[in-house]
Every structure is written in structure tokens, then in C-alpha cells.
Length: 206
Image (cartoon, rainbow, N blue to C red; front, side):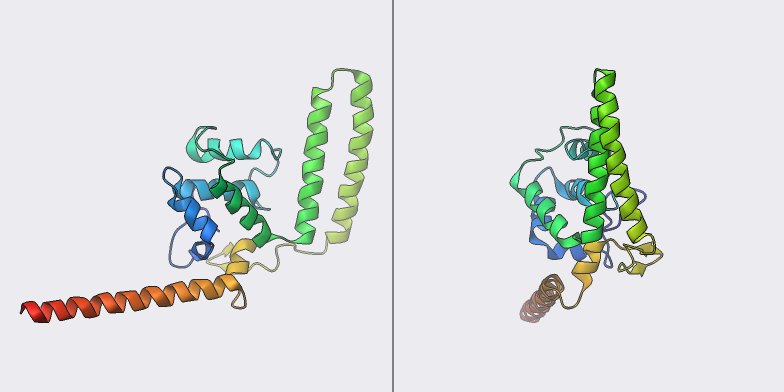
């Protein structure tokens, strides 16, 4: 998915509309009062490359709504439509290496917050040692993956590297690609039927 630099929302155009193949995404966008801004919030919360990944898991939905809607109470985040869209987004973009990195980042952020809120020097010292162990895990991960581009599978379109979600949907072997193709074919048949009906009516009227 690509964010429009002018609106800040997921970009809608003929080339980047593959998200419509996912039923839960369409239902969320069509939900009254939610729309494309809601799906943009889901992307900000769930995507590996999100600009707010440094926020805690609990804080991320609130920050996403603040960015997109300018209020932290714009939507009921626990509603079925949002939760299903989040689950589908997570499943579609899943990558073991990126998932490991994401978990390590969340662990570090959580520990830093604990240290910040600790009341005694003893507690801070103890937790700093724990943070050191987490940092060692980070360093080990970075060494193992330093030669890899974990986003290398993503194709580039118009200078923009697509996220893993878009790659999955564009894969011609995937269920989502076939579903999108069927929907497009059905729409074409419906349009042809409507045009045929209009022409018949025009002939009758003349």
C-alpha cells in the first residue's frame, strides 16, 4: 500500500487498488464513518515499515488515529471490522525475519518504558541489565541479517518500493489475485450487459 503524500491516506488509483481484493478491507472502508482513513490507520498500526513502529503495541492505534483523524477517539478500535482487517494485514505481510525484528523492537521499547517509570535506582539498575541482554539479542540479529535486504522481495513501481502486503496480492498464484481478476471480469460483464440494455432501450424509443 502507498500513502498519498498530499492526503496522507492510502492512495487509490488503478495501479495500487489491489487491497480491494481483501473482503475485510473493503468492509472496513465501506463502514459508515470509517472509510479509507480507517484502513490507513490499520496499515500504520500493523505494517513492518510503519512510521509509528517505535510506539508500544497499546499506544500505536491511538497514535494512528491521532495522525489520521486528529483525535484519539475517532473509532472503536476493538470493533469486528478493524480487528479482522488487522488480522488479515498481519497474515498477508508475514515474514519470519521481519517478525523477529518487530518483536525485538517491541521488547526494547517496553523495557525502556519500564526503566523510565521505575521509582528506585535499584530497579533502574536491574532493568538496565535486562535491557543490555535485549540489546545483545538485537546485535546478534543484526549480524545475522546485515547482508540481507529483508524487503528485497518487494517490487519497485514508479520509484516506490511496494510493501509485502502488495506483493502478496499481486502474486498471480495467490487466491487474492484470482479473486481480484474474477471481480474485474464480473464488472466487465455487468458493464457490457448494461450497455446492451441501454442500446436496446434506445432502439425501442426511437
